[in-house]
Image 1 (cartoon, one colour):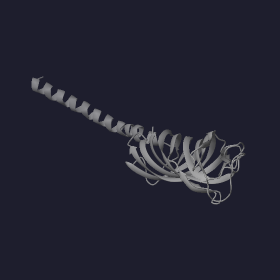
Image 2 (cartoon, helix red, strand yellow):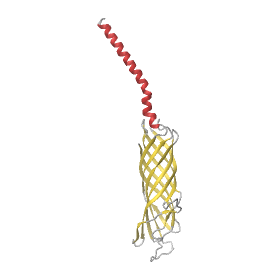
Image 3 (tube, rainbow, N blue to C red):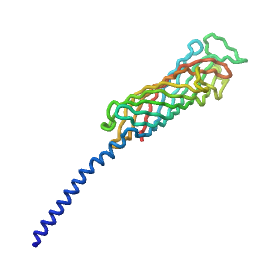
Image 4 (cartoon, helix red, strand yellow):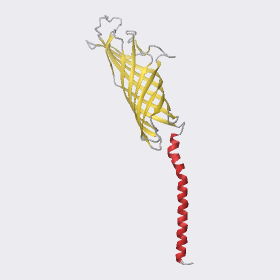
Length: 257
């Protein structure tokens, strides 16, 4: 056999092997595609959320016993598990910490202190509240997260809230003398099972940037929370008796891992 014939046979074998490799690659492509794209988004897959943000609060106080109610800037941080239910809805459940506060001018009905209901509102009340919340939410994307880099979505649901700490500072607005500065016992007008426990509704909108082929994401969310029961504030040793309606607008930035 001539050298030229051997070279041709060798080239034919290389071509045959390359063709087999090409066919093998074509067969593996669907498997690779499935493992990279479909598996991270499969039904029942659980993803983890970490988020933090600021809160703008709204309070409706007693108009005949207070004036000038102003909210302080609040803070929230949360962890949530997102269960992928399909293209149309996801279920989220988690744990959230919320710190809020407000101030107002009002009365101080305490022994050895002079008070008149003359609408002078001589005392400034500054209140801080810390609570833990258990939100349960349905998330509805407006498009397929798997197929788009950006996914706007609606989120809404209910949640339990528990006030585990509150603090009050009460001072005379004209003299500046502080008459009370200590932990307080703010709870709810209506209790659920135990003191400091109640619930809320929440609705919101979000915009999510999807990291393709992984189901990871970065998102910005605006959510409004409305307390079902009013807060109850009794000041220092029953010095006040106020029921206060509260709502909170949360602005948060989060990561889905």
